[in-house]
Image 1 (cartoon, rainbow, N blue to C red):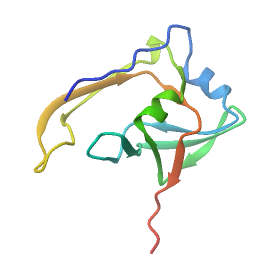
Image 2: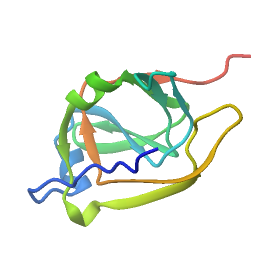
Image 3: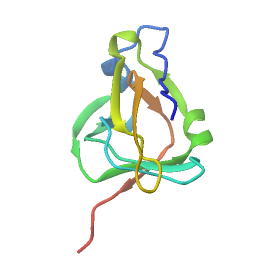
Length: 127
């Protein structure tokens, strides 16, 4: 599996500045659950923390959030990437492929990025 990273934006931009330009949205921090089809085209990802954005400000925490898309639509919806001051690199020893699962060191890096019009769902279990 390749190690893929998203280059930081060239213009100065912090997460706070990016959020200030969002009328209504969700700020997703970290990585969480994932589901990817065999062709690596359609996917669903979660995160670790979720914040509601209203009128350019963090309005509170959310829970049970995931986002869905396909590769082409998702990357075409990227409208902003924070600069190199916000960049971080993460890694794992599990690449999520194979049956049984494969052990393979991978890394992915990115600065905070903004994606418009991505399908966001509520993942709460109904009992």
